[in-house]
Image 1 (cartoon, rainbow, N blue to C red):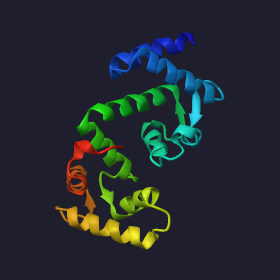
Image 2: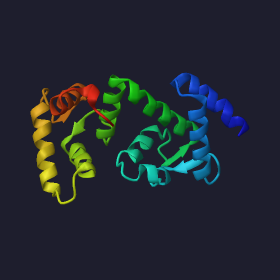
Image 3: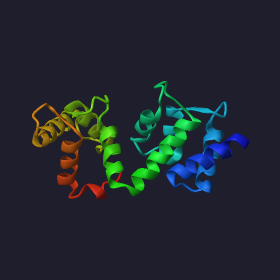
Amino acid sequence: MGNTYGKAHTVSNSAKLTKAEIERASRRFSRISSNRDRVSIRQLAALPEFADNCFVGRVFELHDQDHDGIINHEEFLAALRSIRRIAVDPAARMEMAFKLFDLDADGQVSVDDLAKVLQCTAAKGVKPEQLKAAAKHAVAAHDTEGDGGLDLNEFQGMVQRSIGTAPAMSC
């Protein structure tokens, strides 16, 4: 693991993660990586600890810098830093939630974006038409600029009104 320690130590300092946490994550990454440096987003999302979380793949997509569906070691560590940051910083948590919902990365959560996320998180038996209607209603109710989508501030307002306060949000 010679080179991994250097990477791990640098990331640990910048993300306030302990050396042990980074080394453990690096070992896990190495175990699932076929060539010790790259893992598909699909492989990561299929891990048992992520199986019930429909956002895992999206989190790694956001850190896949070259958008090839493969996470290298540096991208993996960047995702860990991001996850660590959202655990302690409500503003970072809200920004990450917005990015998770903004599926096409156009700077707005559209009705389609929201409906797809709702489908991912909805209980079985809820019909797609119901989710689309709920998404349409939510966007219409919170789109203060009238442009058909929610920017970060509008999204934050929706979340705050939906759950009472944004910092309590759990991604």
